[in-house]
Image (cartoon, rainbow, N blue to C red; front, side, top):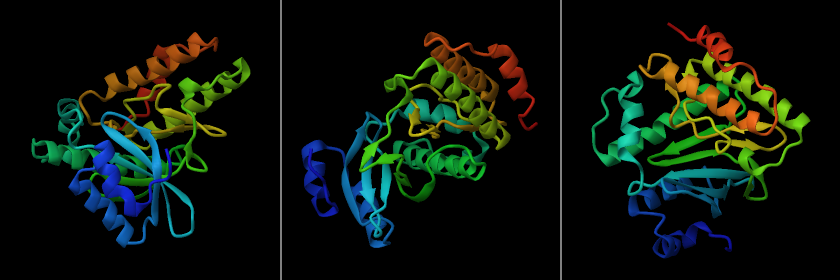
Length: 244
């Protein structure tokens, strides 16, 4: 597919049904503020969100993560929002939930990035559109861990790095809650993405989500031959870092 410049977005919206009018206006506002100069192409298309490659005025690559109002899993999002004290007064309607979901991911990324977690730098937010650091090159997103074939030595090293990143996230007051080989990009080192489900330690399901993250990491790396740490010991070590 060819490049999609900002002036072609309206036509692109009609052809692919990616953008609604509200989303178009959100992107145009980012353009008018000078945060983005062009939207180049679709880097990744999912059911609930679309990642677009874009450029700023200095020709630096950016990622626009656009949450799709129509296709977002309202019930699943609500489960995470309702236990998060930062979003206790969210109205229970689709638009409000999606807007707060985007705001939540942006806020979580700010916390993680400030804690030096290996994740995309959050740059701007407008409505349901997040502007993020682009992880990859020439408009091509870095591959996901699930799509990369690592040697046993490299896989063991990546596993140890991921446990360090998980510890940083927890020390910053969050539980990622959705770590898997599908939410990790490999670009010289592992980058954690998709922070929309991250919850504070005060969330009633925080420890359950932490244990799930640990199990997901261990299960994947064990399957590819890495000698993993005991998940219960990891859980106990990381639980001790959680804020009361």
